[in-house]
Image (cartoon, rainbow, N blue to C red; front, side, top):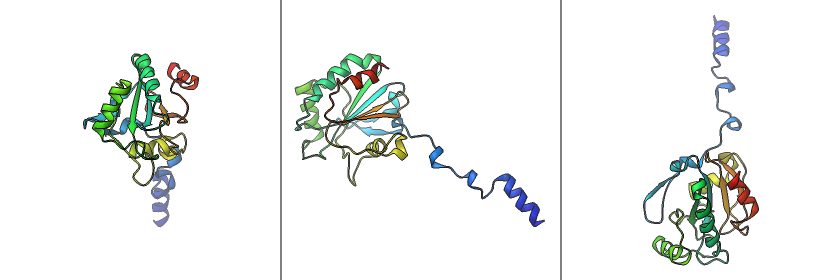
Length: 186
């Protein structure tokens, strides 16, 4: 009788490692799972962007790279009807270069650069208080592509229409770089 039970357990896979989830076979997560707060206190649901290419950028108002807002806005205006969405996340992680409140950031972006792409509430993009969106973007175990670290303000994360990370672009690389344009047009 004991042998029959063991055989049945083996056939059914009870206790077998084949019934456990293998993390290496799991699908990567999607940015579409996240809901965040925007600069105005409203909920922004990334699921609303299914079928669109997404560029996530951490921003700052007092950085040497802040003029990239102009290129980001121009890129957004040119390609938004073709399915590109740029999502900005203000962060104060680098040299205190985003000290303002959400209201101050919104005013700065609108008055100085005419920003009309979605801007989220200020978050942390590194360290112990890293926002969950950036945990997803920077951890290969979650994004399925690679581990990375946010190097500075205006680092760009490119995500496909399924919300999967496909590339990480250096902060100094302009939004109008050929590599980014090729990704948009592909």
